[in-house]
Length: 260
Image (cartoon, rainbow, N blue to C red; front, side, top):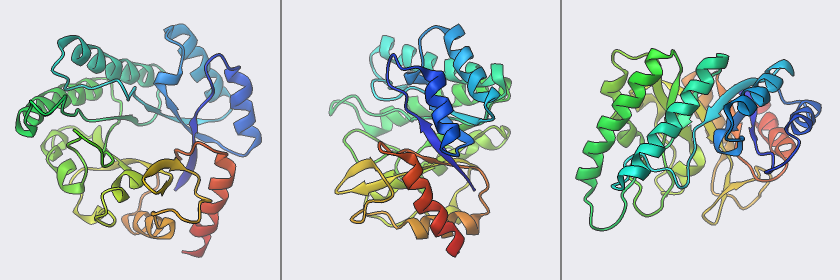
């Protein structure tokens, strides 16, 4: 497993200095949230190229939050899909690793899960084909417990397994912190019918995501996560999606890994 930090430079920050700081802290793997990058593609390319020149291996996370690829608002739907495809294009231009993206969600109580899921399957199928054409690995992420989300569990992710039958570029990003928010235990990775291409990890403290792994009252059993990934044979990035200092969380994770 390769421990990665999340790109979290503040708006208007000196991106190169921030990347240098992560190198100084001993990181060589990073996942960049493309929504944190400048809108200008040339500036995006410059930041990515600089990170690569400093020795980073990079994954990308497509825009989230306001993004909803299955929105019933045609403009919101179209812009959200375009944002995912732009992240795929950025990865293709630089030969980067997995692009993680969020599934769609309901827009309100007036829409049924069945209606949304039909639309979601069609849209994700299109995005998966787009990634395959550009030879970019794609990770569909499981979501945390919150209103209007539809893709939570291994069983939910497996609904999209047919899309991977002739597409080796389509797989899963497993967020263990999201998973534990449902109170259903750990995911059974042996039951996953899609390849596991990326992992997100932080601590869940009283329902709050993205807490440091140093938190002593977190819900997530970090040792159990490491054991599951080890048994699965996972050798990709474990992205520390923490809001605090990733260096401290990396130390926690490294200590756990050495005891397995």
